[in-house]
Length: 164
Image 1: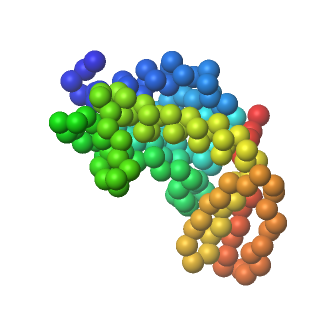
Image 2: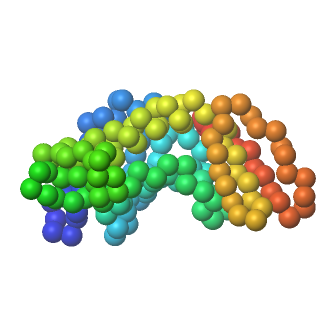
């Protein structure tokens, strides 16, 4: 492991390699950046961007024409080491779980939740809806949503989530 490469990158890459067969859509790394890895899921529209940041966790967002529209999932983590073990600072104290190792924290609190999101939310959904009006929003749908925006300055895009 190089001195420039964060330990969490290796934790994620090793976990992803080991658990690849558990994913409904095969995960992969598209591009490595200084502070993040862009991810992909085979069979999911490229309008869904995913990335892993070793400082903050895993996020997935809907993009349209190069613009971020809305986050679909945000599995942020803020690692703290205490005398009791590792925990996520974002969790309320009375719900906080402590883990014996950094690997256990990342795996349970972030990586496994990502796998669960992929295998439930993305498997169940068939459509990605992006709305652009006063702001932007994105939602996953099981059924194809009706086109509902009629005003000329408002836009709605219905994108098939699963691609061949």
